[in-house]
Length: 186
Image 1 (cartoon, rainbow, N blue to C red):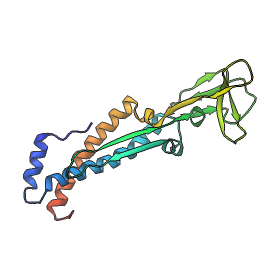
Image 2 (image 1 turned 180 degrees about the vertical axis):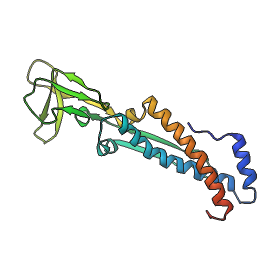
Image 3 (image 1 turned 180 degrees about the horizontal axis):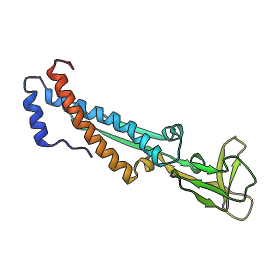
Image 4 (image 1 turned 45 degrees about the horizontal axis):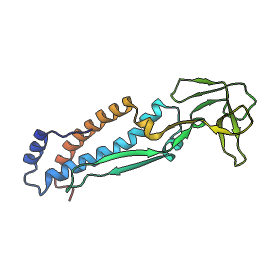
């Protein structure tokens, strides 16, 4: 969570006293810039920890950004979506083979051995990592990994994002003050 202290708001109001709605505009613009930056950083940081491709992660993740406005100086980002198949992470072998074991890892550099799993291509063309539910031939289920929201929700990633977002708001607030004092920004 990002916070702007009351003393900071008072300082901004004093500096921008001659600019109509200057403090609200400066704070709103700083928050919105931090939201945009945080959204980008969230996916980047998730990919630094987890072994998933950018396209797979962003394609399975719904991101909602509620921008701040001068009427409501608050904003947020939310992430949701479906779980990605484990096959979209590190998997070996990564093609259908008659292999005795399959190794897979969600995080970069980590591997888990799956003795009863196999890589198969379905009639539809979909390739995935599956396991049998019973000793019979069918049914089989696809082994799933994590969703984008779960990856981004990792405690270390969230803490890092919060620190960076707070830093970005503070930097942008100073920039917005200068910009408004120089007559830019409408």
